[in-house]
Length: 99
Image 1 (tube, rainbow, N blue to C red):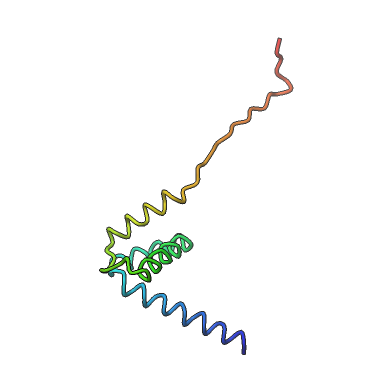
Image 2 (cartoon, rainbow, N blue to C red; image 1 turned 180 degrees about the vertical axis):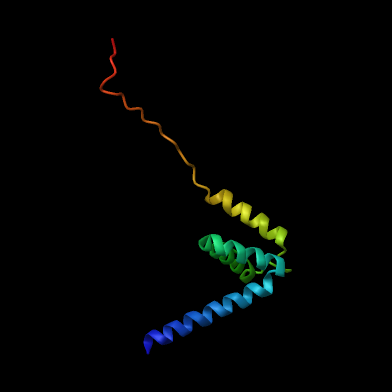
């Protein structure tokens, strides 16, 4: 029973989350976020968190357009991009002769 109650609470919280997102996102932005969630669910979740926090603080006064969502995605991508470093290690063959 306790597990069922937890699942119900989790589902209800997710429904509230989706309702809030539908209120602050334009339909195009919502579609784009849904497509991103198919490929990178953790990134979409992070963007949703940022949007919800901004809405709760009153920073969002109108629906977020697709262009604004793209700008937000670019900002988040530049902040979270990891530097890749390639190191090449050469192995000298035992058969090579240094003479």
